[in-house]
Length: 636
Ligand code: GAL
Image 1: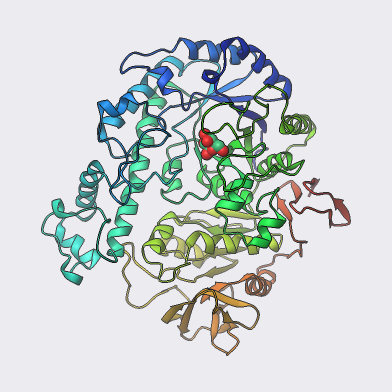
Image 2 (image 1 turned 45 degrees about the horizontal axis):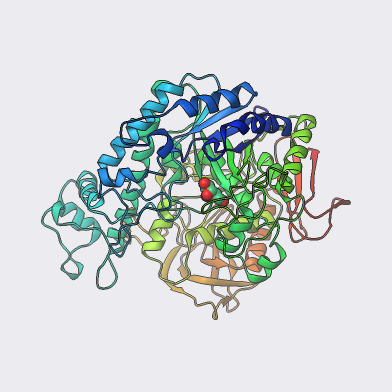
């Protein structure tokens, strides 16, 4: 049995937005609501260092004292996502530059370039001052670095500092221009370099850029985020024992979260189900309308499972949507009960803490239309009551242990970059492929652990899926050889080397599976390929080899090959095809499939089964009526 989970609630608060006279009252009300955590400080740089080198920590001292005295634990954010205006005068070239070569100006946030050494040095200064002052403060029980790396499309920067840093990165990775030329195939179109100093960033070219160059730039850009975050964790570790956390965003693929997470103690993320449904989950119009006020029934769960892996088992939700947000195309109010459901779902997937964003709605600036737990006039907004209800329920809830899920799904950031660099079809999306696989597993009632591609141990799993994985690392292949369950690889898995060129013998080169992709095609939305059941959409590989055909196209060609627990999938199945393929494999893997009504989702932990109703109507499960936004749990 794994350790039972601790669970608590919190809120994001901005003392600098409110008169000091109301801090104590706010703090008392947070405690009365049943909150444990309060996150502060992450955008307050202009108040902490109003002019360069002149610090003002007095107000923050008092805020932490007031909150701590009330009984709250403080999560202190470093303010590096919002460099103040004076920073630009100090470092005019610190701004990130977009693909068209335009600087990303001051006036919102995240305008910095990760590669600017002067800005990084100023970040080190402010983090050092914060660490020295609050590292041993008994009320500061956790730290957040920066805020949402990558949000607002801010990882890639085509600045001069980025260009210099990329050349150094290439020199380190390839050692000689000849090796780089060979790895990228630069003999093609006379793209060979004589010196690393000749290499530019991959933008503003006439037509297609070399995909190897693009992938290298994506790897570099991700490494810059890791370096930036590490500069902060190295300082904070010297001053505090408290856990270090970053708040990731949903569906941000522009940096390797596993790499950033390796320097942190807990992975947290910011969950905005209603904004995400309309702006990033590729939901159909029918799904958008059915789940408009609840969110996509798999989106939150997917990110909980992903970030639980990034946090090596330790997960928080740092920001939980409490009501309408301000940033999606349309911003509806949640169905009553949904903030409670989202909170319980996070706990069911292993979250230790869920913090609502934000305490009180701000009457000014960009997010004045964004709900909080309180209205701008301090009256309770609807989610306050739901937070109180969860706090009461937590006190009665038995101990839950997560344990291992029966199914593992591999998720790999470089694969996302690779297929963006070499899509071959306008709608090929790595995230979309993995998410469709996840949805299919959840439709079958299966609980999932997401694992990185570097996984070396699959003990305990019954089924492993690795769709679209750029490379099949040797360690993963050897784990698969020892694996007693069933594995489905493909499409595209193992089809390129780390520099995005085609290996010979031709892919997928899976040990113990005689399958070769002889040719492949991408399929436009109006021409899906009919299968024995359902269709392949977007992608189809023509397979050769001696492995048995385990699923066929309607005209009798292989759609999946393999037997005895190891399979290669030739395309991107639609929902009907996925259900049929899983139907075939899941039973053989020794797993039971559920047939769930649309919108009902289950999460099995080691000790409990949780059932969530995302549908707008009452649904039945195991003879129990579960109302809309209903949450049900029982011991297993
Ligand atoms: C998050 C961000 C918060 C706030 C919130 C609004 O992405 O971290 O600072 O902007 O969105 O929904």
